[in-house]
Amino acid sequence: MGGFGAWLRNMGMKMRMATQRFMMGRYGTDKLNNMILGAGVVVCLMSMLIPFAPVKLALTVLSYFCMGWAMFRILSRNTYKRYQENRKYLMILQRLKDREHRYYDCPRCHQQVRVPRGKGKIAISCPKCREKFIRKT
Ligand SMILES: [Zn+2]
Image (cartoon, rainbow, N blue to C red):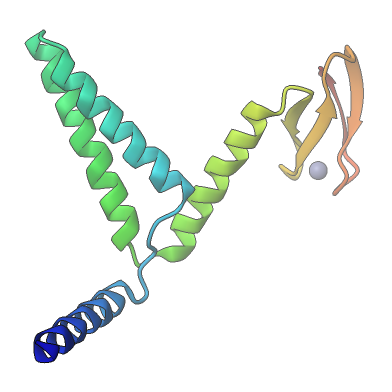
């Protein structure tokens, strides 16, 4: 009996090691991937509920695309690029959540500048390159 338990533990360890080796140098998952997978599942469920064939097909393709995209990102070896994608996604999320500020990109150096909303036309000076530009908030 103890032999079987030990064998099972040994197998578990081997599988974990094999997974670790497989994932070495690969990106894995992140917040953006969770969103893509979540969207894929939602679209997949929608495709099951909709009886209209062309829409059903389109949704099915879209859900496969989401799953494929997420899989590609998890297995990707280009970790820097995947990291940047996730950063961009988190930035967009932050912009959407922040209702008290507006975000502008500096026309000269593309530095992101945050200004309070509802102040009318104001002159903004870039904190990085000191460029001044006028925007409506
Ligand atoms: Zn600037």
